[in-house]
Every structure is written in structure tokens, then in C-alpha cells.
Image (tube, rainbow, N blue to C red):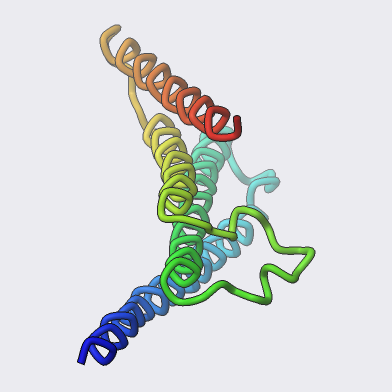
Length: 175
């Protein structure tokens, strides 16, 4: 009875496959969406060199393009989070990926050895998403009062501090 229960308990980890498959599908969807966005953003840039554009229209096109590029980077980063999450869950709960361990092209980023390792890698990518999002927010920001500029500067300082602390935490783990 105990062996049967333990076998059922051990095999219950396979329920994680649902999260692995869903995360992988979402990652593929995000890569697709970001790639389509990149294609259309690049295809609209043919007008940028047009002599028919006024300088105001060119500035507007440039501003819109930069905003779209930031959104594309954000999409790719989110897709990367989902991919790392999917691979990490699989390696932690189901099985090591034999093909990745024997491959010379396998990146250490994709090899997960513990839940803390997965959490750390995801935190780094989420931090990068937040930096990109802040940059995207800053592109559309209008500074009306000196307090607006001060809050913007404080946000940049906090982002810098967060990046520094995450870098120092990584250095502490290496030693």
C-alpha cells in the first residue's frame, strides 16, 4: 500500500507538464507577436527618408518607432521569461534535458539546477523587463513641474540601485 501511494505521489509531479507546455506555447506566441511587430515597424520605416515628410512628421515617426522598438524588446524579454520558466520547470520536476547537457551550444542560462537558480534567472529577466518598461514610460513623459523631473531622476536612481544590488548578489553567489 505504501509503495503504491509513493508511486502515485512521485508521478503526481507530472502535473507540472501542463505548466511546461502552457509556458512554452505562450513563449512561442510572444516570440511570434514580437517578430510580427518588428516586421511591421521596420516595414514602415521606408517613409522615414521621404523628402515629402516635414520635420515635425519625421520627429513623430521617429518617436513612434522608438516606442515600438521598446515594446518589441519588452515582448522578446517576456517570451524569454516564459521559455526559461518552461525549461526550468521541466528540468526541476520532470527530467534533465539530455540533449542540452551534451550540447556544446547549450547556454548556462537555460540549465537550471535548483528552484533558487530558476528564481534568480527569472528575476534577472523580469528586472530587465522593468527597466525597458520604465524607459518606455519615460519616452512619453512630459515634465511640467520640477517635481516631475525629480521623480523621474529618483526612478532612474532606484533602477540603478536595483541593478547594482542584483549584480552584487550574483557576485556573492559565485564566491
